[in-house]
Length: 424
Image (tube, rainbow, N blue to C red; front, top):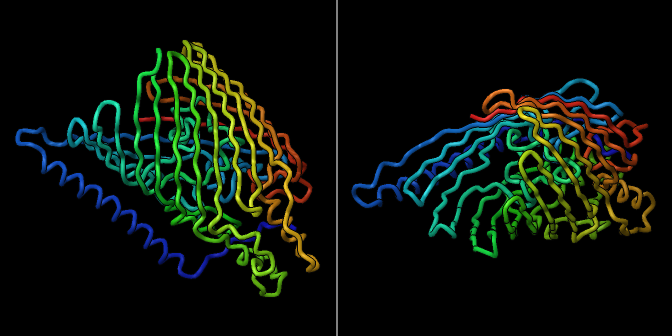
């Protein structure tokens, strides 16, 4: 059973969109008001706050041959097929930094990209206050970018990444881009290097695509976690952990109704309560290593995602990416792998129900590897042109990181990408 359905507009969608925009503006306004209060409380003679504006973006084109649409990550409801598409990687971000004092800063960032509802409405991805209590300890509060994995906080800034996009086998399963909450970071001298740690807690303000025209509301889901990393010369190593408790149920009944209502209006979870996602936890663990010496750079990452319930499959992933700078040209080569461990599914004596359950869980299964070959040309200050080929080889059952697979899809894709990355 295929779970792809045609797009439809839900009643009240426009009103809900207006409410979300208003909420984002209130959050930003609140932070700026707080910032103004801190600035006004400064001692006489303190210089006025300084404001700096920055931006980043990617103009990208992608096409995929093989019978499925290629996506960057699970926040995208559709991707690139056999025709060139700009939706996978193209984005634009603007950021304002307000230095209120030598130790206090307010930051706001807005990003426009292909999002869960198929549009490009700008999102308020950062809106926080940071205070450095000492050179070794800082605190941030507001809307914060997530750092589930190493290098994850800059995964939207194409110019900061060697390849066109962070490997989807590794980063693609993340739908949490930011949280509303707080984090604390501390640094200690350790041997010949530095030991840095960070803890965070907050709630998700986001939604994610569940099926065509249907979104899963992740708002209110608590997130907690942190990381510990060690930096010594050319080496950087990090262990990360994050846990998410889903606050709301998946819209499974809406999906089944769109597919023809095979259960005749009976709520699916009333028949298979074990498949509930609300109040269950997902746990993300990762280990990352970066070596950067002269022209050579190597990134090596591993992760595992464990779901408390059976509705979404667990996964394991890793990648290795090596690049070598030759003046303005940087060729790179990478390999990544992601797969789902075997697991048992709930069973039911009701005819046909086990097939529905297997199909639902099957949408989150992965079993593929990707070989990446590309090159980066830094032809001008703050401008980089990239070209990349990805060969994805998997099983037809590997459905999690693709969209709209054809009935005869064999699990393989060849992906061609071009991108112009810039910062200003």
